[in-house]
Image 1 (spheres, rainbow, N blue to C red):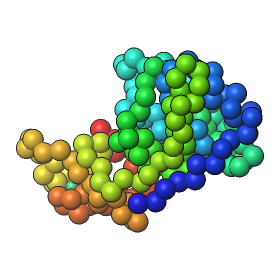
Image 2 (image 1 turned 180 degrees about the vertical axis):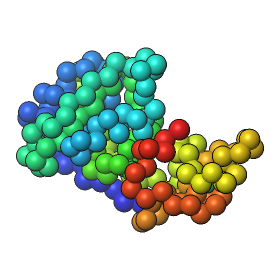
Image 3 (image 1 turned 180 degrees about the horizontal axis):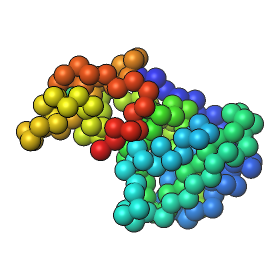
Length: 160
Ligand SMILES: [Zn+2]
């Protein structure tokens, strides 16, 4: 669907980005959304990634922004695109041996599967049936394909 801007950062941003040896830097996250980005990626205290978060970093382009750095993990396309649900202007930098090898924007996915729980208690995905949740991404939010329930803005509260 939509493609976010992939503007090149300033020199200062470059320094922040280059500090990890291998992994992923998620840059240009809307200020205050870093923890939600971490949540939407399924990173919890029990996962093994080395994580660092910078919040309210000065950005000429955005005023303030958040940055998330993940050592020794490269995000898949599916993981990257989830971020677009909460921060559509985020940029992803894949770092190998201290160098930015790949820089990409995030694209809002068409469908979200197995990531978000349907808020409708009567939805078949909330029964004992072995059915994965499935939502269509619409302008109004995420629409459950089983019961048509719509999750509006607060998507991160429903992450499984
Ligand atoms: Zn549902």
